[in-house]
Structure formats: structure tokens, C-alpha cells
Length: 553
Image 1 (tube, rainbow, N blue to C red):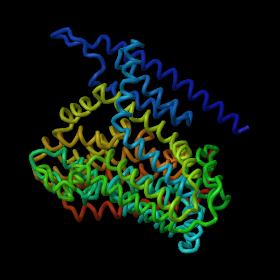
Image 2 (cartoon, one colour; image 1 turned 90 degrees about the horizontal axis):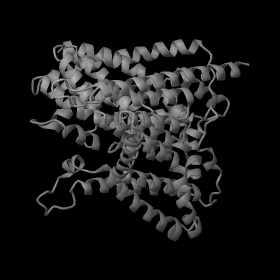
Image 3 (cartoon, helix red, strand yellow; image 1 turned 180 degrees about the horizontal axis):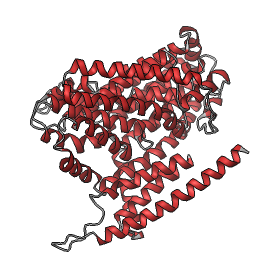
Image 4 (cartoon, rainbow, N blue to C red; image 1 turned 120 degrees about the vertical axis):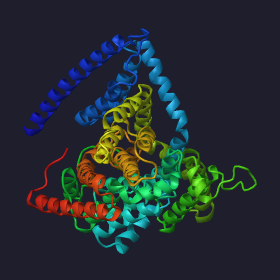
């Protein structure tokens, strides 16, 4: 009876949502057609207006209501394209597919890397390496606390790129967390929390390069390093993962997922378990722990070499030669990861087929389509997420947000870090990109605040923190998608279970930035944030301990 009532309520909410979405679509198109420059009579349309942020918001809302991420993302893409074409179906269709093709072409290296990683994972499973590693980990890591902290530490070690972090940590630690009955949703949260939050405070990473390159007129890398202690979201997220793992703190929907994993041996809780069938394949009885560790080590080394190769490190005779730090700053993650993945798969062929001989040539060949098939859900979600990001960009969301901040927030100097944090959170959540948020806000912050001042550093930190927060919890963020892929968890389950954790940290960060705008002392402000974060988590632990876990699915 309860299930029928819930289903009926969902249909009602969905109906109301769709009616509102159609009304907003019609209103936006009508407003855009009438939006002309009074001086020249030129049609301005919806570009650079608040309407530009509506398509991703509608997509996210529909996904949360229906739990159908592909249809929801495509719906958001279609709304954005119709806005761009002002309701003309031909113009909208052309813009939609031109954007999709362009975005996939720009990120083709990431798609190829995903497929290569899927193939390597299939090979490690067939060789028996994953099973052997899981059996070893069950004996070596004896507690759930140890399994979660080990996942956290591995995520911190692999800091050079967030994409690589999400996929590698998930595939290495999944046998460990499964053995200790840790839900896939919890694994996805830990992976996601050690991807972007670690990269954004690592001076040698693709993220540091992106931020440093957006600061003109000063040493961008030095400014990035000064901003690290003020990056409260990244630091407090890492603290949160340690505390919830060490003290067994679970709240919100995650508490139900963890209860079912621990006491009912159900790692998924909800019916959506898109990767469950991949665990039923035949594996070799000759597998060793080294059959998992060695390919992963080669993959890590090859990808790091690939990244610095694309940055110019291996061409000392060239006038464009870069040292190690500059190579990371100048690298192409898309190409570097693809090159590294290709080297790793060649090694896997030699190692498994010719040296270990625990996989036949036929099994190796079968792993190619199997690996591709395993990554199809992630590739589909990424394709739509990239497309909606491109359409939002073409609608001028960046110009609207930049103009808003410059016009309305410039005079609130001491409050501005907290305001910047909130705006960056919202923009990154709606667009699914933290790098795009950096590009929009950092140049404004550099212009608004005195060059080299502490308040400028705090403002840039608030921008980075907010961008990572929005990227961390957005359903259309590529790192969120790859975290659920690496953990082999339903994507929307990952989004729903980690959201209370993200919002809790974000609330503490907002208060911390309010203090930072007035105190501007790195040690005092960081201490305030750490104490507040620990206190809030202990209060939530006590509060959640009184309530029985709810139901999901």
C-alpha cells in the first residue's frame, strides 16, 4: 500500500514538474523573442541572461524525481537547445547535435581512456587478480574502518588528475570494501571526496595548472599555494571522510545503505545495480595479488609519464621545454591519460598472455568488448553532461554570472568570500564544471581585490572551494559520474547519498568564510573551520544514533 501511494505521489510530482517546465520553456522563448536592444533594435535573445541556467536545473530536478538520468539529461539538453534557437525546432536540433559532436570530439581521449580502463579491469578479473587481491585484503585489512581509511589514503596518493583518481581507486579498492560489507554508495562517496578535493590542494596536478593559468599579472602557482590553507571545502571534506570512517558516522540516506550492506549483505540497497552482472564471469584459478597490483602500478606510472610528455618534459632541446612542475601545468589530461592507458594495455597483453599465461589470446580478445560494454553507462552520461554544459555555455551563463557579481557584490568586501563561495557552488552545480567556474569568477576576483592581498587570496580560495563543492555533488559533473562508475554504483544513488555530507561541509565552509572575511588570519580561520566541522559531525552522530535506519528503493 505504501509503495502504491509513493508511486502515485511520484507521478503527481512528475506531472507538476513537467507542466512547470513546459510553462518555463514557453515563457523563456517568448521573453527571448522580445528581448531587443532598444538603441539598435538588434535581437538579443536569451544569451547572457538568467534563463541560461534553467536547462541544467530542470535536468537535475527531473533526474531526482524520475531516477532516469539519461532521459533527464537529454531533456535538459533539448530545453537548452530550444532556448538557443528561440523555439525554432530545426535551429534547436542542429545546435543540439553540433554541440554534442563537438564536445565528444574535444573529450574523445577521455572516452578512449574509459574504454581502455574497462578492458584492463576485465583482464584483471579474468586473470583472477581481483579475487586474489580481495582474499588478501580480507586477511590484511581486518576492519571496516581500515577498509575505508585505506581507500581514503589511496585517493590522496593518486592526486595528479581527478578522472584517473576516480577510476583507479574504485577498481583497486572495490574488492576490499566489498569484503568488509561497505556499501557501493559509501565507496563512491569516499572516491569522490578524494578526487577533486585532493587535486585542488595539490600543487602538482592538472587542477593547479588550470587555476594558475587563469591568474594574470602575478605568479599564479604561488598564489595557488597561498590559497591552499583557505580552501576550507577541500580540507574539511578530507577531515570529514577521516572522521566518519574512524568514528563510524553515517547520516541521511547513506545510513540506510550502510545498514543494509553490513547487516543484510546488500551492497546496493536499491534495485538499480547496473554493474552486478559483471561480477558473474569466469575467472582463472591461478590468480595472484600481483595480477592486480602490477597492471595498476604500470597504469599509474604510464599515465603520469603521458601527462608530463604532453606538457613538454621529454623535449629538452626544444625552446618550449618545460621542467616537471611546468609540464604538469602545461599538460593535456585528455591526451596524457589516453597515451598512458594504451601503454598499460600493451603491458597487460604481454604480462597476462605471454608471461603469466593465465589468460588465453581468445579471452584477451573477449575482454575488449566486455570492457567497452562496462563503460557504456558512464560514456552515455558523460556525453549528455558535456552536451548540456556546452549548451549552457553557448547561452552565456558565464557572462550573466560574471556581470551579476561585478555589479552587485563588489562593495561587500568582507562578506564577499562567503558570497563568492555560494555563487561558485550554484554555478558549478548547475553546469557540472568546476574549471568553467574558475574561468568565470577568478578574473573578476583578481580585479575586485587588491593584488596580492590576503583578502584576494581568500576570495580565490572561496571560488575554488565553491566550484569543487558544486562539482562534487552535481549529477552532471564528470567526476561525480566517474566516481559512481569506479565504485560500480548506481549514479543517482551516489548523488542522493552523498548530498547530505556535501551540504553539511558546505554549511560549515560558509560560516568559515564569513569569519575569514573579517579575521583574515590563516591559522585562526582554519582552526575555526576544523572545530566547527568536528562538532557538527559529533552532533550528527549522536542524533542519527537515536533513529532507526529508514528505507530506500
